[in-house]
Length: 146
Image (cartoon, rainbow, N blue to C red; front, top):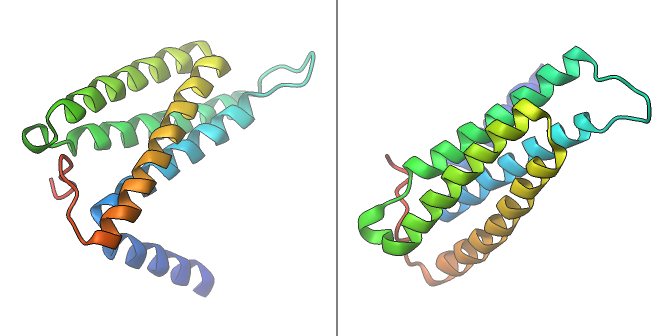
């Protein structure tokens, strides 16, 4: 019990003290982690039928990822972000559509495509966050304060 409380306190402190860029990277990390979880559960051995409890867990992972993507969408600042913010919004919209359709069809290929692209964006944001922290400049185009 004490370990769980300590881990929870650590995670909360990590989020509270993170920069905007670090928070974005954390969101991407969790989205990729959830899709990895869903993809792993979708894998079946030859002749194996999908267990209904696994289907529910897969669905929860995809839904959580869609929620994270929606959070990324609403954090975009179109005034400061300009064309980049608009392009990210369009990409996030496509991700959510793909994940919805992939979830219905239990399509590993579509889920993996979104995961790969999220991971690419995560890498780009990690680089931006690292350089922003080093230079002490705020991120433009993203408003995580709401």
